[in-house]
Image (tube, rainbow, N blue to C red; front, side, top):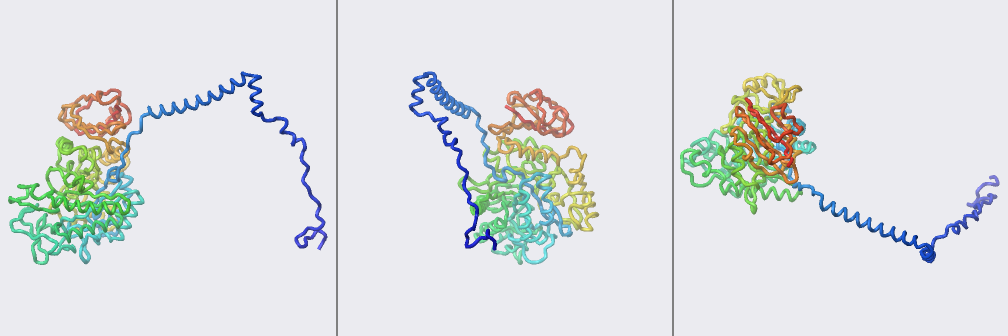
Length: 604
């Protein structure tokens, strides 16, 4: 090893190293610019009084500016208008519901019957094309139609009909929808069940009386295990009524409610809720003679709904996630309001009740006046508005469609009604749902396959679907399909209007939670209806509906608005360009051979 090797941790013969000496001139740098002491400042003040005055002035000026800025900020904050209040809304208050029969929507396994996997594959259409925020599934274990394939075993409130899939398919369906931001509401029909249902046994049913009448007349008895039991829908309906006054049955339906909420459902819709407990002394030979006071909206019915509301609220509190209870009165066939199903403030019932003010056969003027006059303001928002339902046929109506989205409440789009289709009262081929079978009550048009296209390509991959679907479309004179509604160059359509109104509602606070008033002071014309939606701190919205064939009119909005801007005009009108302010607050509405809708933004 050489002389520079390291041994025992010591270096041998390493050159001596040292720091460079400091520059001594640096040590004296502090003396060149000495700091002023207190004595120095006092001496300068005496020798140069102006300097003292300048120094004091700077200090005073600093504090004057400082406190001035604070004062200006306080005044600015006090005088600046506060942001208008925005109420916290639940998903069923802020969003639009898409009400769909999964048996009729989309088939995934080529058996020509819709199922949950097929519905899951169509979520883009529901969320993006339609613009819905939540989905309501009709009953997963229906008693109509009778021919719906049932493999083996009994139906149950905690099972999925085998034609749709199973509970695991439901959970997968829920996960798929939640990825798209969609909530899921499950329908449970606790009023009536199929004789194949596990609860359809004597102790859970209602014995039939010989003099009893029901919706279909006097023949109300359905046999189960050799005994006659009462059915709201009569002996041909394939259904029997549950005895909801029984504590055992009540506990069963509570457990069913808990079950679906535990599987990811965001709410429950109670089908045919007005018929739950038909009690009281009824005198007559037909339903209509004493309808509805004898059979519907009884205290027993309301009590059942209140018990189910407690279950829903308990599950909401457990998960810290809001769940909804919706009551659909069913095919009550009358104009009496169903607000009693909401319960009371002390003992609430449903969060939302389905209104039938704008279903097929309703008149616009009477519907608006009934809507405005029969409820107080606090009862508007708990209403769900729709133009079609499982018991009300879809139909094309400009004013009813617009009312659903522009009035207070929760808009519900029954699958297919977004197209404005009005299928005739025929039947599809027996190989297609509902297998050539008409419902005992209601209209078959509410149960037809979704009109995706003329050949059923988007309904099913079955080799047989083309000819069957084409015959179905032709026989029922269906002219509007999803394919035609979304095609380029289609022009104005109810589907396009539905999309526009849903977008407008999402972006307009006055339509989401604003007050509602009929503007009867603006016109005396019977062919024009006007109402106003307004939320404090936000621009108001005026809706003008001009009936076909009416006389032309001039409406003066100057008492309400400083400016008026069209938001939606249907059919399109070159005199009213959406988004372009109207130069005159006196507006001329010309008579037309077709109905016209105008939605204006009003700046006060």
